Image (cartoon, rainbow, N blue to C red; front, side, top):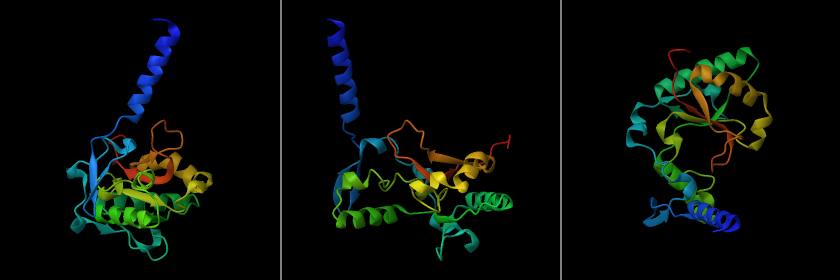
Length: 195
């Protein structure tokens, strides 16, 4: 086999790996949908899913508009500490999303599908139920929740300081993963002993 043939076989194998179907599914309104490849293997372990009865409310001063945002207690406490530290540096941390249940994720998907989008398209931007870090009560979306967030002093501050408070950027813009960048989405992994 010559080098050109080997290169073509390698490229075809890589393409097959990228297009291989995922055997995971989700059910929305009694319809079963195949989970897109980017989410394959990313479903949440049931022990990570928050018990809504244990969640605590984020103080209004850190919530967008009149939103009521709930998080697990450790995440809320760390976020309040982070937001106070940011204020000392003239940076305002405002959250527009915290805990979201699997049923809430379904409602988001159903609404977008009712507007004419396919499940596959919606799932490129919205985690299927059972796959969203928001279901853990440990994820937050900061304002502004859009691409422009990358250009804010909030993002610069978070990149420099969030780790001290136990937060990580799940989908960074320099990521090589199949997920689109979400610079506004931060997940509380917890503080380490060295912090």
